[in-house]
Length: 323
Ligand SMILES: C[S@@+](CC[C@H](N)C(=O)[O-])C[C@H]1O[C@@H](n2cnc3c(N)ncnc32)[C@H](O)[C@@H]1O
Ligand code: SF4
Image (cartoon, rainbow, N blue to C red; front, side, top):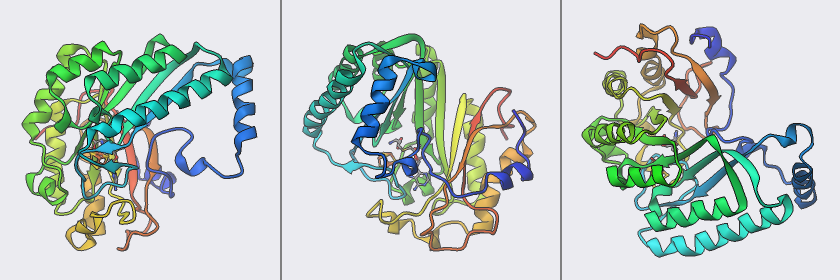
C-alpha cells in the first residue's frame, strides 16, 4: 500500500460520506424503490455471477445512554433499556422479510454491528440478535464479525461474551485521550480503562482491534493530539479510523457545545492530523480506506485543499513512533 503523500491527500480531498459502510448513505436515493430492491434480492437468490459472493450485513443499534457533544451519528439517547425489546422485534421482522426473498441460509462473510452503541444491548439481547441472524443466514467460518464498542459500556467479561457470540473484531471509540478534551465533549473515559480493555481483548483472542479517533475536537491542540497519538501507538491497534470532526449541529442537539471557537483553528487541525503520521518512522503507515468528511455547514473556514479527511490506517508494520 502506498505511503501517505501530499499528492495522495490532494487526490482524495473531495467531499464524501464519513461512514465506512457500502454503499454509503449518500448513495441511497428515492429513485431506487421497492421493485428495484426486490429485483436485486431475486438476483441474489438465483446466485448468478458476482451475486454469488457472500453477503456483508450491517446492523445499526441506535441507542446510547449519554450524548457525546460532537456526535453526528444516527442515535437515540436514552437510559431506558426496555427500548431494546421492540427494536429487536422490528429487526427480527426485517430479517424475516429478507429471508423470505433471499431464501434461508445465504452465506455471510462480514457482519458489522454499529451505532449508536451496540453494547447498549445486554448480553441476552446481543445473543438474541445473533441467534436471529444465524436463523436467517449462514455466517461462514473465517468471516469478519465486528462490533463497535464504547469502552464505557463493557468490561473484560463482556468482551469474552462477545467472543463467545462469534465476534472476532472489535472497534473501540477512543476519540481523544486528553482529559480536558474528553470533558469538553462529554465523553470521559480514562486511558487506563481503554488500555485494560484492549489488553483483555487480545488475551481473549480477538483477531483485529480498531480504534476510532477524531481530530478537530474542542480544546485539542496539535501538541495534545500528538500525546493522544503517542498513547494510541502504545496500544498497538491493528487499525485506526481517524475522523475529521464534522460540525453537524442538526445531528447533535449539543454539538453547539463543540463550538468553532473552542475547536482548533483550521491550520492547527491540519497539523493535528499530519504531525505524528509524517514523523512516523514507518513508511508503511498507509491508507486502506479514505474518504473526506467535510460538512458543507461547517461554520468556520477550512484550509483550502485541506478539508477534513477521514483516514483508515491498517497497522501492517511496526506502529508509529511512541514518544
Ligand atoms: C458510529 S460512531 C459510534 C461508535 C460508538 N458509539 C462509540 O462512540 O464508541 C463511530 C465513530 O464515528 C465518529 N464520529 C462521530 N461523530 C463524529 C463527528 N461529528 N465528526 C467526526 N467523526 C465522528 C467517532 O469516532 C465514532 O467513534
Ligand atoms: S459517539 Fe457513540 S456513544 Fe457517543 S453519542 Fe455518538 S454514537 Fe453515542
